Image 1 (cartoon, rainbow over the protein chains, first blue to last red):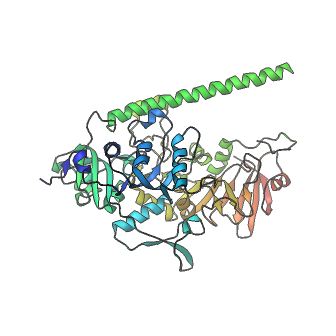
Image 2 (image 1 turned 90 degrees about the horizontal axis):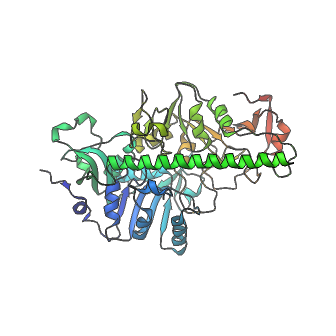
Image 3 (image 1 turned 90 degrees about the vertical axis):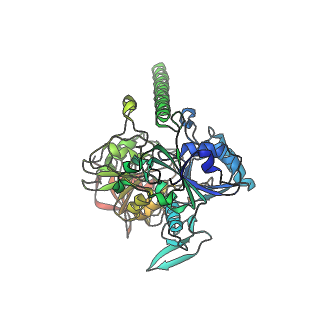
Length: 275
Length: 229
């Protein structure tokens, strides 16, 4: 009917070098399936606009989530509100610092609220916004400042991503979307701001099965719908598998730490006893 | 933690005790957002009827799942610290645009961690300045700017002993003139238009000792007393 339901490969086939892609990159609501397919496509010089660019150390947690090193090889610019601090156990952060220093990667840093309001300004096709956030901080560097009613504001440009990748619980064939829990996240605003939006969903239902009252993203904002295959790493079952694995991994780590502390205590007590 | 050259072995408050003291600032009916670190520990001590918000899009959550309840976890229901949440009555989910409207509209009490707070209530929390250019701001600027009340929960001194309550920030600024109350492992300090006022001190400590570990002028409230939990 609407021809929106398709495969990930077909939906992503319109992408080309140099496009700006917006999507959740972390936590519930991340379009993991689309990220995976995208990151194995041979396109480069991407600008990716994500709330949270967090490379994970814990190997078990990386399953199902996009691989940051792949992102890096395809990306010339990352627009983000948050990333991990450089640490020895995160070699990718060293790589990022190196590429930023040599000028082959640009990192545009802002607060999460500024990212959202810039997308909102893009969605409404505003010429920009005067935001109060970041006055008197590094955010205002190189930007127009204005006093309105005695308060300082900073001019922020709108963000209109070429492509938005969103994740939703269910879609109908019209592209109407409903979300579940905190997986709503940035998805509705990304869907509205982007010129071309692809939604990955866990389920595509019959047209009469979505309650019109419950629809959060109306189908007009969705160009393509892709269903996550059952056995894919982004599927619910597989995600539960790696949540189990990562929780038991963390529990084991905690127990190891506790054992270490106990052992260290033993040594301290021994020393005291020896005095 | 002891300052270099410090003679006494006095105990500072544990993170849990700092969190307990912060929790006393919240009353039933308050909406609050808890930052990473000590602030998140407050969740265990806040009075019933305080509603917690997480900036990724949830309002009204309580207990998180522990390792014994893995099978009940819903992978799509988590807070910004990626802790999986249990359903509680009154819980609601929303997108991040709605979330940041809540944060900026002055309806939340924000409990944030801190790297430095100045005598004027300027806050530094998002960056140590050593990797300038990489983003670490998250929601901190919005929370510090927009909350109706900002409480900073932090250690009084950095690991190297340097004071974190200072005259002027030396670290990158998160938000100017935003902090209302500072709760540290040594003291409770009010930020007023007349400057910092020490209102409570940790058991076993006196105001001179606390002033000596603070890099900003501070008056002592006439009714200053030991912290109660």
